[in-house]
Image (cartoon, rainbow, N blue to C red; front, side, top):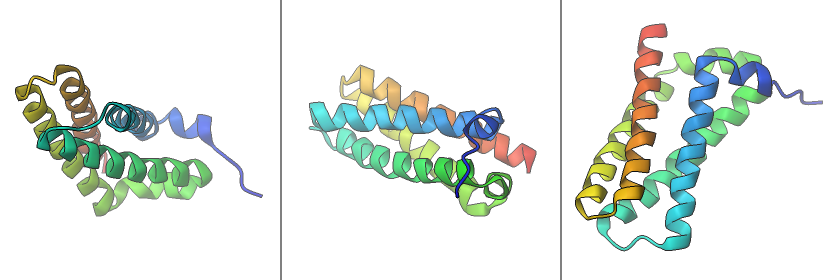
Length: 127
C-alpha cells in the first residue's frame, strides 16, 4: 500500500516551491490551451509550460509517495539543472511575450520563472 506524505512534503521549502511551480505552470499551460498561442514566443511558452509543469508534477508525486525521494531529489544535479533551465526559459519567454503586447501571460511566465529561480538558488545554497 502506498502512503502519501502530502502535508509533510508541502511543509518543506522544496515542497511548497515545487507545488507553486506546478500550479503556476499549469495555469499558463491551460491559458494557452484554451486561448491559443499565436506568436512564436507564446508557442515557446506553451511548450515550456507543458514540459516543465508535467516534469514538476512527477517530481511532486514522487516526493509525496516517498520520503527518501523527497530527501534525495533536491541533491541531484538533474533537479538543480531543471530549475535553472526552466527559470531561463520562462523568464526569457515571458519577456518576449510582454514585448509582443501579451502582458498577462508574459507576467505569469515571469512569475513562474522567478519561482524556479528561487528554487534553483535555494537548492544551490541548501545542498
